[in-house]
Amino acid sequence: MKHFLRMFVQVCLYFYCKCLWRCLKFVVRKLTGRCELQRICYNIKPGASRTMKIETSLRGSKNKLLQTSVSVHPDAIEKTIDDIMELKKINPDINPQLGVSLQACLLQIVGYRNLVAEVEKLRREPYDSENPQHEEMLLKLWKCLKPDCPLEARISKQWCEIGFQGDDPKTDFRGMGLLGLYNLFQFSKAEWEKKRFDKAIGYSFAIVGINITDLAYNLLVSGALKTHFYNVAPEAPTLSHFQQTFCYLMHEFHKFWIEEDPLDIMEFNRVREKFHKRILKQLQNPDMALCPHFAASESLINM
Image 1: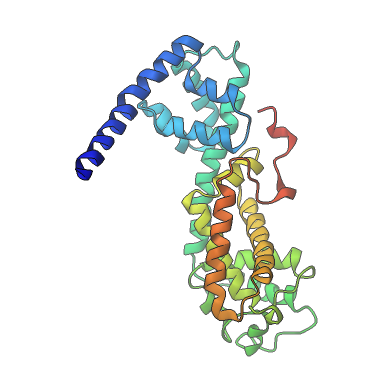
Image 2: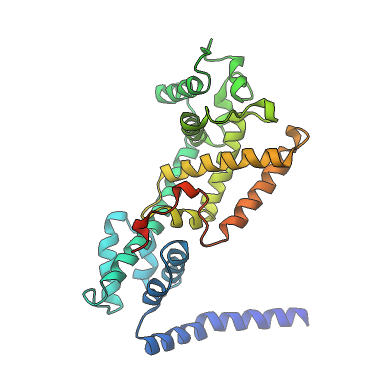
């Protein structure tokens, strides 16, 4: 009986999604004189709420032009908007704001997709001790964190002083590749003098930074960070936005760790998982911007 009811519900949902919903959209368009894209842009304020509904509408369309519009090259967005307006029989002279709003949404949608690709490329690139650029950035990281303490040798136990697990940091970058190094370096340039992340509070800076990089990466790839980026980036989110988010997560984890007051580092995974759930819950709010000081500018308001 339960199996039959489950199947019945699934059939009803399928019928609703494939037939009734499309009929409903047709009726609403006839009554309002506006297509779904117009209703979204005119009735929902700029930001994640609008952009995510536009993205859902385009991806769920039966029309190939609309489906593929979320993955076009950034340079083709303007033409794509013109094609959409023509397809929907919308006069741009009568509805000039619609084109501006759709362009802003597509820039964010396409930009997020490209950011995922860029971050993934960095993550997949392994640290290479034979690469002068990789080595230079690693040594700069040391100088940022320990400006008054020269590194005695490239392979040295001194690396443990800033939170690496052994005498050669390259082994700690295996999971996150260059992405881990990029994030640690970015954080150390701006934040190290404000907060000392060291063993005095129960964890080591470098290895935790790489771990939080993994957390930020998974939030990005899963799409959870769309809420944040669509609210803070007026156009396409960039690697800089991702690194700012990483710095924010480092600060928040630092505070969260102190609040949790774990007995020792053995509780790290438990605290990290609890912190992850807290961030995910925050990102369920469509108005959420994780970094208040990186909040969307006024340029987003009129889009």
